[in-house]
Image (cartoon, rainbow, N blue to C red; front, side, top):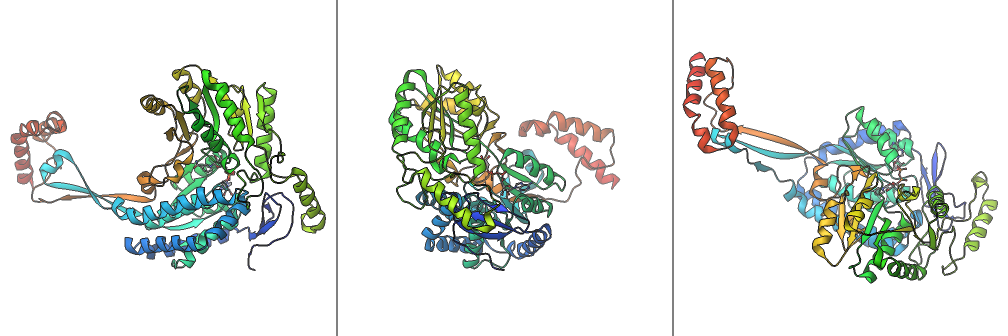
Amino acid sequence: MTWQYHHGMASVIQSKRDDQQIISFNPATGEEVGRVPQLSAAEVLAAVDRSREAFHKWKTTSFRERRALVMKAREVILTQLDEIAHLISAESGKPFGEAIAMEIAPVLDLMQHFARSAERMLKPRRINIGLYATLGRYSKIVYHPLGVVGIIPAWNYPFSIPLGETAMALMAGNSVVIKPSELTPFVGLQIGEIFERAGAPADLVKVVTGDGRTGAALVDAIPDKIMFTGSVATGKTIASAAAKNLIPVVLELGGKDPMIVFDDANLDLAAGAAVWGAFCNAGQSCSSVERLYIQEGVADKLTKLIVARTRELKQGRGDREDVSIGAMSSERQLRIVEDHVNAFREAGAKIEIGGRVGIADRGVRSADSVRSKSDGAIENEGIHDQLSAISNLFFEPTVISGATNDMRPMQEETFGPTLPIATFKTEEEAIRLANDSEFGLTASVWTRDYAKGRRVAEQIEAGSVCVNEVLYTHGIGQTPWGGFKNSGRGRTHGLEGLMELVQPQHIHVNRVAVLPDAWWMPYSPTAVETFRGFAKYFATGSIRKISLLLPQLSKRIRELLKGG
Ligand code: NAD
């Protein structure tokens, strides 16, 4: 059976699954994108076995060959730029232009960077071993690939995250098995096709479709590394399943990212940044602005600027170029947003704009038009009879003032188009409020005083902190990406991310191997006296002090030579 894109109206419930297949839907229209198989554990195991065979050949390739493949894959992407962007938009609901700006362009940059730089970054290097060098030894580090890297991504950046990790893994000499999110399986399959068209050896990049069960089967198939992106709950499940076989895991988890605006900030810029940071990808970015803290004196002014900018935004189908905010990617996510907005209301916060499911009047389609279309489709499509219908998967961009940290949705990840605003008086209070979270992925600080910006940034518990910028640093593949606290473990991107994909090996060489080492057996009173000398003189790292040890050292060596 072939698994192809399929068009036709259906329910707006996305990715209905049964035991054999997953149906992927466009969340903005309810159209079926297509169906993919739900692969069994045995099929996943077979894929990992074939991937391991491919790895044994790929690990012997030169950096030049690896670079050629990754650069060719870039070319393939560029020849299909709009097609890929439309597919990303269709499966996730995000605007087509945003798919180019926030997924395709950054990952192309990441690919060229690692294609060109991985060889230099992974070059064997000498280590300074201090006084051991005076004994005629040297040490170097060489980097080996790990083997099969299993990539289990989320649905919110379904192209750039797994593709970036794939390119890095390949440059390090690994093979890859991707288990895309069940909400975006065709984008995952697209990554496999790109490498196939670029001429990758068979089985080097494999894609196994399915839901969490397929992901669990991938972990149980014992790959050599798991790169996981998703929720904290699934991250914990995967970490514990991986621990059974001691599989190393990188976890890129949730965020509740704060933006702090001091009263000396450029408020126009801060307003634009807050709106983009909170609402791009309909707020479904792990690093989106989830909490805005404004210094009291400018809170009213900045809130008004933000509301005015929000009012201008068009919301609608992602395939329209004038749309800024698309649909939420799933009903589940929409319900979380609805629950959080209701919780804010009940706790006494004020909804300044938005707050409802559907598209506001300023939008390009009315909620009713979406509702009637999808309802009609359900009546016409027998296979979807059992799917429960919802009106649509749009949620208005929502600005909320009067939020405080003790309100539940200021602690839980919302992952939707909401921008709750709280106020603070002092620098210390801003830092305390920002750090009052189980998460620590990113944060941003806005001020014209750069020294203050850097000082505050360094006190925030988050993996990446921007001063006068927001959200986009995942797009800088040269820099490490990862979270503090419950936002994750390990890093992707940057040198630190590349190091997650290799096995460092220490090679230690004694170039003057003519004498025994003073610490060898048999031990004796002379040996013990020498060991005292090691503690007192050698372990100081001082050449002058080690010279005081030389008479005792030569006595000990003579003793060992006589004994030998
Ligand atoms: P999720 O945890 O529900 O699913 C993520 C992936 O794990 C999917 O492919 C899913 O099929 C798979 N999976 C589910 N159960 C599994 C299991 N038992 N074993 C193996 N795989 C399993 O997350 P989601 O809803 O897809 O993504 C949203 C979350 O991702 C948010 O919390 C968001 O903040 C986070 N995220 C983090 C980053 C980051 O870089 N830190 C980036 C993007 C998204």
